[in-house]
Length: 171
Image 1 (cartoon, helix red, strand yellow):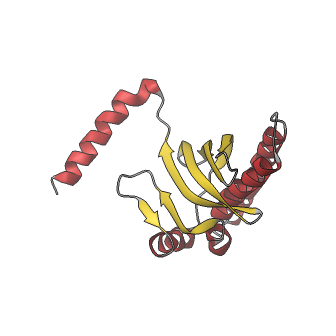
Image 2 (image 1 turned 30 degrees about the vertical axis):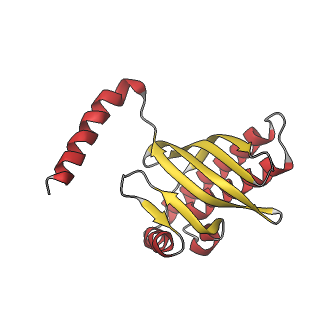
């Protein structure tokens, strides 16, 4: 158990450092880009360490998290905070950022992003979301997680998905 956690920690640290270099090397990086990258990297780091208070503090008080299943829409504080507590009691979840893009509203107080993350356990995902500026800080107001399905696997995945939804409907 200790060995597994240690390995996860070392791999996670390496990937965060590589990701930091990737983001630092991007052209036209603004101070707000750096702050938003830090918030999102901290979000993933807190989740991988199951640090509930640190994780939830990165969301707005009325934030929303969208999971990968059709019924997974959790609002703060009640639904999402309870979901996080349950998940973190099981050890949290680990997603490492691979690529990220950030855009801003004209007034500069709202940002939206899309990122590709990778989970050692589950593979690649796309995270999309919205951040709101609070004083000089950014907070996540909305985060949506979706599976990435390669086009060549789409037909097979679609059939499995359709079957699962039909099975649910017939229960």
